[in-house]
Picture 1: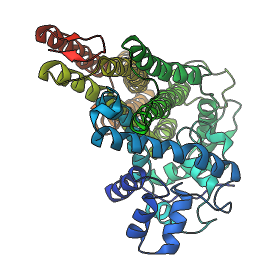
Picture 2: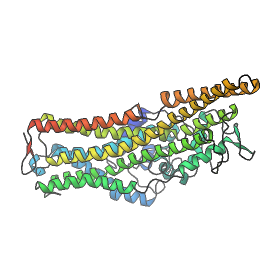
Picture 3: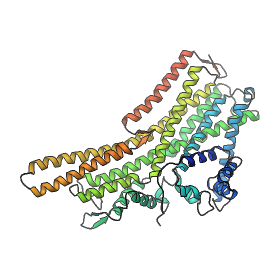
Picture 4: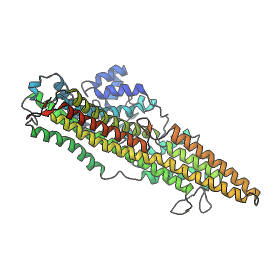
Length: 493
């Protein structure tokens, strides 16, 4: 059954900031109070707490397994990280056993980044969807929440009935309802609706499964950061857990904070995967127009000499580009957040190098390992985004080549067949309009972008250049400051 989707893809800053407050307040103790303040109603606040996992209690809203995981893992982990941060900031440094408070701040940055990403998700909710979060089930329910998750619903949208059809119907409404009105002649002379053609292309792309190496890479990446921290502590005689409450809370908070990095790394890989699927959909559709091969199991091939087929193909391309638009905007934003995360860590590394602030060598280990891991994952996502953007360049190149062929053919045949020449001129004009539309829409107006810039070869070079240059500047700062590390790991300038 088709899920009715009525929304626009505009971002709501109000929804973002309210969600940002919910996410950063301690669950159970702080966020429900914030819900009462924002909702102005105990009933609505209760519903918000159940739907947003701020203090889940009722099996009417969430399955028992989810409730148990929340109370046994999610909530205690959040409390420990918060307590660890507060302890590191206010406790006497002697009670911390020489642990650098900057370690806890770096670890807290992981969960902060994750909460920022979640807040962005709610910013892209429609007003109706956002309002439903304050209503009792089943106005909103656990299944709808799962559909909205990048790492669950959008990883395998075909496993969630109504998700793909709902997104396709919305894209169709955005384009003026062309799916039911436009048709394409099939290979055996049978007329095929444009909806069937687009659905075939999307099915091909979204049948693609997330690579099996994603999960091992996520675990390995977090392990690299965590092991580098623990190893540096062992080398300097630091405490792994602690002999008093402040030290134990700080160490556990640091470890739990780093472990939450699995979430943001998973987001980064999912972003790259989504860019890959979108490129596959574009390549599949483009091949139906630009390829001279008319088999490979395709039900239709768009005739490049037919203005009607060109119109249908262009409509199909716009539909596929806007399919799942809110998820598309979210993955671009998530990729940008990851890059900012690594750039901020590079800036912090330079701050320690050039200002001679007291720090522990294990903090340097955390910063360097995190920069390398996040930069790698973010670069992978940028690379996939760049491939998607380059597909727009590739299709323009093929269209321009075909226009050139028509112009040459028109010049040589002008005196032979006036009627044929008129038809070719119409086709050429249509192709030129398509080329201009693709150029404006996909390259100028709404390109695939990261950090607000079009995803092309120059962007990935610029990002890596910033990170590498920042690392080299930090190295120069440590060398020029003459820093050495004592036996217990503390910097001595």
